Image (cartoon, rainbow, N blue to C red; front, side):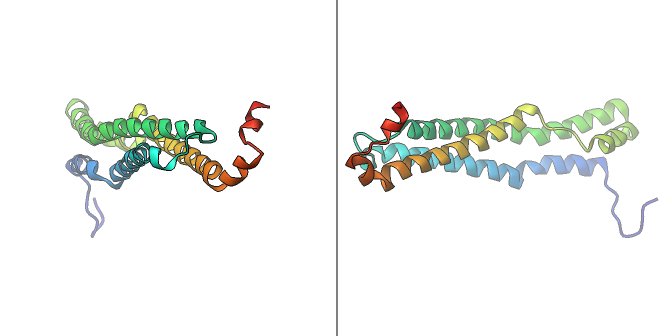
Length: 166
């Protein structure tokens, strides 16, 4: 018996929730990181000729930034692709479980496991996307600090590249 004032959640409600969750804030967050990565990579490549000197210091950091942004874009697209299908797959799994095992088994399974799980490929895609995005931002900051702020000091007599050779 349910308590007065509380709505009972049915399996149809769970299925409907999974079907509507593909427009969640999490999906939008991944889209924003991919958009930032695409915009940053485009701006870096487009402005390369105008704002970089002919012999920049530590170009490895610029290359790391480009690689990180590209990897972030690719992993973000993979995460978006799997995210769009996850909730549809979960709703389908609940529907199949109900048809094969009945409502009682499905309810106990969902209560015991906290729902239907996410694929590991999706979880790792998101983690690596965020890590590569952060790595690219850190690399860009290091490159900018070395080449813009210390440009006059580095061109004087002390070259930063001497530290790398030694």
